[in-house]
Length: 574
Ligand code: DON
Image 1 (cartoon, rainbow, N blue to C red):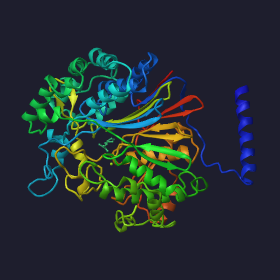
Image 2: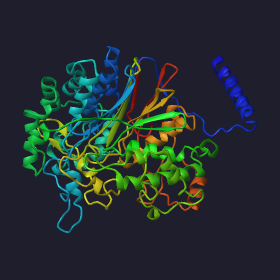
Image 3: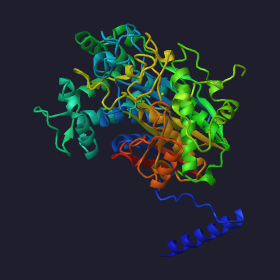
Image 4: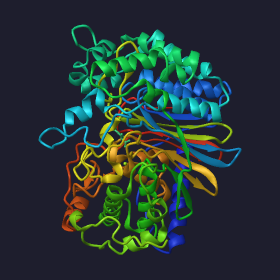
């Protein structure tokens, strides 16, 4: 009771202060109605509870954020098979407190040597979507195992044996099937049952689902994890595991060879950097499009009176959507693997370029997508996935997004390994100029070439305030990743929301083509009408946009928020 009275008095004080500070009515745009979890020493925000707890256990035993991230990454491959993986790839953004620097570990899949530009085009000249999405040819050479081991060896403090142990135990002993896992398997049951090995891994003999609460054991996956424990990266990329992958490829017209696996390389890159008002943004560079376009959209929005317009007001959403369109138009033309084409990162993230782009935005009228030409004002002088975020007691932060592409990837499991194959080859432009799986139109920069990394939208991001890591987040969601991460950060930076509210607030998404503005449920009907009056075509509101896992570090405390859009997420801290 005392606490409640004190809170009320404080709120009253704050309102009076706000009135006098502005000399007018306070602008109370948004109430922080969702509360984050709080801890002091270490925290993991993850899409699944057991993997989060595995990571926090590593932190408690003295491991750093990288040790914990790698332990969680391997554990999610067991407990969250829709996106946690050994057979996929991803990106890890790390802030190293002692060295006061950030680094980006790119462990994205690569196209096998036998891949070629028209590999998914059928005799009629159209893209064969089944071949592209659900065949052995859908798979790129996996990067996750190499990426996790690279991060551990270079920046971790524990042994591979220590960080693999939780995953091995979860696979060997099994864990109870949660309602969340059951619903994920239900959503993909029909397709998974088409692959006998995936059926054997996740379903009963008659193809029905195991009852919720039954123990799911994955002995083949435990075997694979033990090969990795014994031989490090070579335990996956060479020897018995690699031979099983290649045998399955050969039996099913797949392209991945022993040479492709042995030749897989992690690339460590400089992150993309930008700023928004007093905040610094550090995010994903190409072959992700995420960081570039988050920075670009923030640059465009920076000088607008966002707080005055109000969170999710028609004025704000209009300008946000227009900025998104301009950025995704540029994405279609310029973004791809930087080893294969020049990606003008500096130009695209330049404030002056954003100023010119801002001039193309009409305050009251939506610009039709077809009239937007990518890069028109660029001057020559000057892209189911999952995310988890870790913070440790020493100030290190890890923001990691990794994926099989679709939920359960290609829905194909390699016999005897417990490993699901990704379908990341679908992230290439199978036919430049025609929309891909996420309806994104992409160009030559993202055509299929041997060895190339497909363009991604995964955007692990860390926002700095006063030179210190303040907010770390990331999301699944295909093309919607960029806009989900963007809005989570803007909500915290510009609208002063706590991290749980920033993550929960309704999101919007526009990706230039199709020329449709998607609004989640929760945007008011009158705002919808005002947006339509400005010429926006609104999409349906049934699907959600992204699923962030976020941590904010403030005043020596860690505030964590798992997105409320999907069940099963967990913030573990101590
Ligand atoms: O790298 C990318 O952008 C995609 N493969 C991500 C796919 C994804 O997020 C699907 N999940 N909802």
